[in-house]
Amino acid sequence: MPTEKQGVADVRPQLSFQLASPAMEAAQVVIDGLPIGEAGRYVAGVASLRVLPGTHDLQVTLGGRSVLSERFYVGDGVNKTFVLK
Image (cartoon, rainbow, N blue to C red; front, side, top):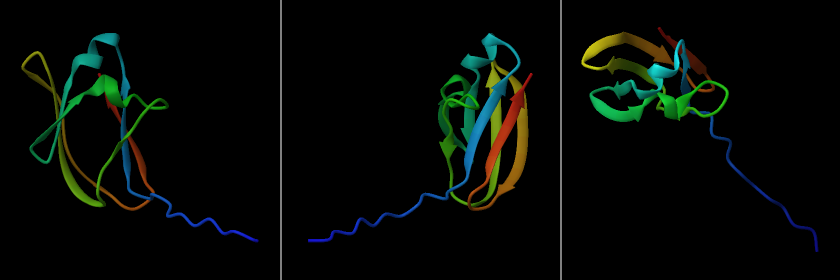
């Protein structure tokens, strides 16, 4: 008998980081006030972080100093990469 497979594509926006140095892997990522983990977990081309579409506040800190602070908007299907210097 014929069968049919159905699925739903996940089109949520994805965030990743391009790291200027290996030390940036330990940078702490906070999105909308929620700690997400280390930037090294979301390196561009390797892994990404899925978020809901809309406007978000991103804070990245390393050793107590701010590396990146940005408010951004992403829509469905968008892949956004942030450069950490």
